Length: 570
Image (cartoon, rainbow, N blue to C red; front, side, top):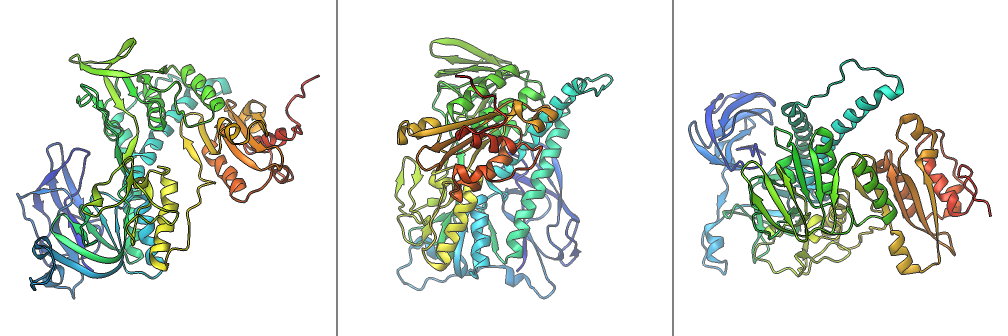
């Protein structure tokens, strides 16, 4: 199958690009990675590399033309392919009951078993899984593969947080006997963004390569479902499939606040692409995105003020963990304003004024809108799916109210996390290909905030456990300040907290704030998935010295048997 050359979306605000010059002619041989044309946007000029090797079979748009992003501008194929094989078949009007809309459209393929809309974590995993199960699969993606997490979310933000971690290590080096002369730290945001973009590009191209290697047919464009349960691409092409997996992901939640649409109010997408560190950054929202990005830019040099409507930041976590995180965050110089209802955002020229009901206004150079994300239902199109509070309702098989249409990932709003979307995509694909037989299980799905230190949890918080079990629970806790590996590494803040059923020793929840919490929580998830009891955990021999020993000690403390916790005298 020929490879499509598309006008890339090179920036958050880019909607079109102009072809400056093709460096190859039709019929020329091209090699993957070779520069084949130059384009220009309103902000920059770019050289476009071939993403496949072969023959430049056709140039659809020529030098000087301005083309919308994601539109096909040329084709690369094999020697035995002709231009005619690239052009879709026009479906003639037969006078049958097809709508007038369909008569005007172009049918590209008719015989897919599964069509996937969306190339994020749920979508691309679903497409690959369905192909591995033997189905003929098509996937439609309007932008770059990988979704929010890979392109403008969890992956790029981790690149920024690693920079902050390096800065903290440099600043603390002297306390470990490592003397760095002239330890002035400067931030080159151009290189910061360049490094981040390099990581993202490597991973997104890797996703596309995985799809191709599994035989998934790729269509670039906006996909929607019509009333006949066909997938419509860019309002002009249709593909048919036995089953549809709708994985449209999520979008930034916009508040209805006067002045919120100001250019100085940025989304997380915008903030990850700025070339200058704001002197003062107001973070509107203290959830996962707000906490992570606030810490990132505080580490890069911004004065950060987090404005949160609730009484505490990251309110979905255990209260003890939240209290410890807020203490650490404030110690890093970040101001936190809770119980704050924003009434207006006012442009003061070179500054923003964020007005808060009953509290003093916040003045900042830039503001980050970090209220959260909501399901993106654009791909639903004309089909009538049952929704609830803006989320597509699905059953345990990931199937919607319309048989044959599945909706894994953020679009169903159940648990908007990339790793949950991976699993939902797998379940949806397996059921779409083999019939509904595999249900989703989220008991062992962890939640993580990549702050410094990291925060992670799986299962119930103490408040939730007491609501369900009353006082018939036991709690164990172990501080990293008593963990040898943490002390040696200079990362001794935080703790592990275990909540268990008092009668049977069933593990109800595990909470970690401290070094490598995001890695340690997977061990905790395994414990819960395998339904291992507290007694069984403490029979396991843990390596020493490791951060993991804090988990063992917390479990031992549930039983009152922790060796490395001083015993309270009666």
